[in-house]
Length: 268
Ligand SMILES: [Zn+2]
Ligand SMILES: [Zn+2]
View 1 (spheres, rainbow, N blue to C red):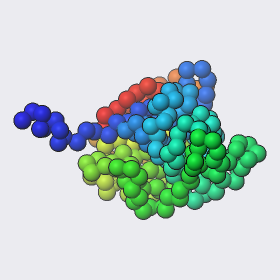
View 2: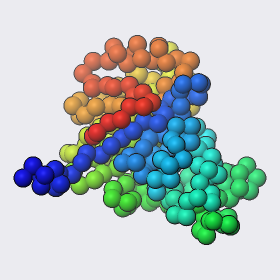
View 3: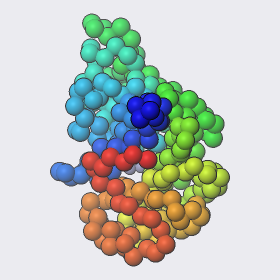
View 4: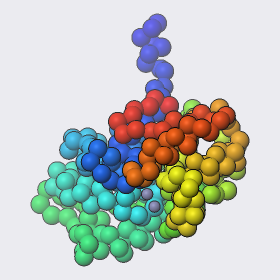
């Protein structure tokens, strides 16, 4: 009976933090998160953290936006896996992200076009790029992903990542935003929200002009969500201001705040 129960019980969604820093210094890796070993959200530090074998398990990659600190490992991953990975890895993003990756990244100038090249031991390209429609759920492996535009210096996306039981909301780089919160309010099974805070409160103008959050604007975004029981997993702290931001976050009342650390592995 116990065995049977074990067998039918659906395991929780595994969320592993490869990197969550808003800047790169030794010991602080850039944004990259692994869901259930085979889905990556952003690729800032993937190849600095995962073994080749673990990189080979990745089948799908969601890209929030095309800033380098969120995509640079697409280059090194494609290079690592070329010739040993015959399965094509699907890279998903909204149209503006796909256009940027095609035109400015895999353009045979900055980096070889790994969405096209094949050769010895590589019968199909190592990467393929796929457009995610805004606001419409799309099946990605065993999960469902819904992309929602947020507010950043370049087009940036939040993702609802859902299985049959629960939803994770991963918000990319953003300043204050609205639509994603109105959708999140309706998700009864929302388990956690990953949300950025890049600057301390005294640099509010810098945060506003670069479309990022501070502890005080994070608190306002959390109010828009209106679900104080849902944990807010904070990411993207700039290394220079890390201690200051943490001190300000700790003063926020009435929120379930957890500052994510690389190496964290959460069963949601
Ligand atoms: Zn950005
Ligand atoms: Zn960033």
